[in-house]
Image 1 (cartoon, rainbow, N blue to C red):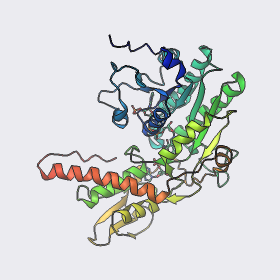
Image 2 (image 1 turned 30 degrees about the horizontal axis):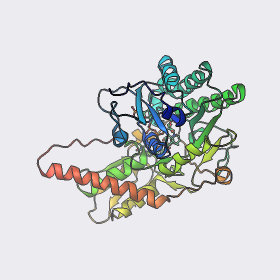
Image 3 (image 1 turned 180 degrees about the vertical axis):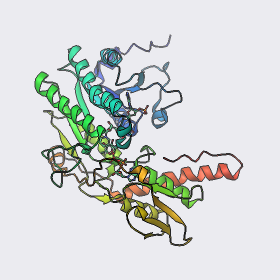
Length: 376
Ligand code: NDP
Ligand code: GDR
């Protein structure tokens, strides 16, 4: 008889570390799940119900529920539903919880501020309360996905663990609550709880509406004639961009220390959105010349003369975070961490993957199949 789906309590499972990842279907969730499986963990993930499949990033890890000794188990749930969260935590009895789930898009948080606060701020509280209500304070370690968006209107450069916060979006403000409630539950109840203050990190798995992926995807499609123009907002914004696969290693390391602490994770290198466009274009062997300035600025393909980059004020944010640059000295000194993947390698990995995807679309189109040209 196949094992019951709920029977996690065999001898093997008692010896094996168990992790619960919220946001397992997202970019970081996918990389972290892979890492923890490699390390021999039993990995549980929270996934939302959706009308279409939403597990593309983790389908390669899927194990049929009837498989014996499964180490990858998904549970339906939502950060806005505390009874469901508590039931899952009770059932799994995790050694580690990684709270990666969030409405993570800064621009969208201006459109959906209340939902963003519910999921990103109160969602964090709900998990911490679950740990407390279930008496797991001495068993379950907790990682909170905090963000450089906490620094917002920056008070000093580069930003460290001691730099004052000044969030500039409903997302940043919700994450500020999550940051402090994590610190508070650590101090009040002795829970091993850490904030990773992560600067932007990207990969071929990055959501298509974040600026890096939007650029690598659009330029690949423009190169192959599948799209005419890429519309962007603030091209002067500067970010400290790293690779997600490097950053999830830090999430794990933070929970393996003697004492829980908060860490800035960044590369210490900064680039503008315009520079990101230029390097992605170079990787694709496309030459862009810039003309005009302000919202009239445009990028013209030097060979064809076509305008391939233009500004759409729709993408400007009511309050912008102009410039972020992290100082990861504490993580380097205490956790021995250095990011392995450099900026240019990151851009070229993303471009290569998106160019391959675009070629598949071109093949479909050339063979008479209609392809949706979605870009936001
Ligand atoms: P993604 O947007 O790729 O993934 C977010 C995940 O959260 C998805 O699995 C999503 O599910 C899930 N989710 C969203 N809302 C809910 C909800 N109400 N209940 C349960 N699950 C929900 O984000 P990243 O992987 O890039 O980031 C991971 C975390 O790190 C986020 O909290 C983000 O705010 C934070 N962060 C990210 C940084 C970055 O540069 N990537 C930098 C600093 C912090 P679904 O797939 O169904 O949408
Ligand atoms: P960010 O990432 O807001 O830093 O949040 P995003 O890629 O959305 O924006 C970075 C910068 O690029 C500018 N920009 C555009 N952004 C988007 N999305 N689309 C555009 O067309 C565009 N044009 C210019 C933005 O104004 C901004 O300045 C990400 C998320 O992953 C958060 O969850 C995380 O906390 C932070 O990184 C650290």
